[in-house]
Amino acid sequence: MRVDKLLAHVGYGSRKDVKQLLKKGLFTVNGEVVKSAKAHVDPETDDLAFGGEPILYREHLYVMMHKPAGVLSATEDVSERTVVDLLEEEDRLFQPFPVGRLDKDTTGLLLLTNDGKWAHGITSPARKIPKTYEVLTAEPVTDEMADQLQQGVTLDDGYETRPAGVAFPDESRSRLYLTIDEGKYHQVKRMLAAVGNHVDGLKRIRIGGLPLDESLEAGTYRELTEKEIEAFQNGQ
Ligand code: URA
Image 1 (cartoon, rainbow, N blue to C red):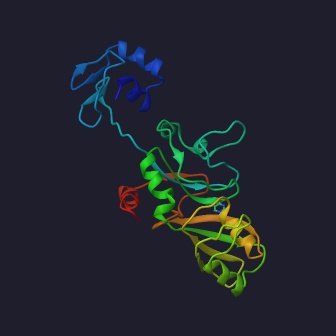
Image 2 (cartoon, rainbow, N blue to C red; image 1 turned 90 degrees about the vertical axis):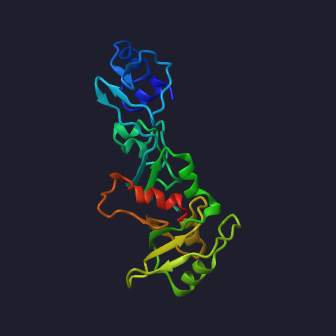
């Protein structure tokens, strides 16, 4: 990897800034001063330091966010706030993107990473990773509606959904946990519409074996643990 790219990535400024810094002779690779922005280093094996301080380089970032309502699942937008805008500057340097999408008004578990392969392993339809949503409905969900959702329903464009998991966390019948292993556009809202109901509130609470960390307030996030990252790599 080019030295200027690496230093910009770990937060030493733009590539132009980094070029100036390099000229000062503060950057060393395996103890040798390197002044050229074009020099190549291997961050895995080379010993990198700046001003005598070791540079801890890593390529990837993996975070779990409790997405709040009112922000877009996108990396940037001309007029609206995005989930990436909610990240600290030091995390934005990794250029993460959301793994799949939640609607602007949907809250809950959203993963962000800059590891495209890992993200694909989660969003790929072939992997059929289950996602669980807490759904607040306008009308109580009848047994008939629950049966239909469990068997699969026909969406407004004719698409037949795969069987879904349905559970009721309380007696109200206006709150259900719906688990689907596919991700069509507005799928949950359209599934509830297909059975004659309406979604008043939607929160994703689980992806595969990973539940939303309830200690995260809406709008906050944390890095995933090694174990959580690996669980998806191993085909959870
Ligand atoms: N289904 C929806 O309708 N919206 C979401 O944000 C996620 C799933």
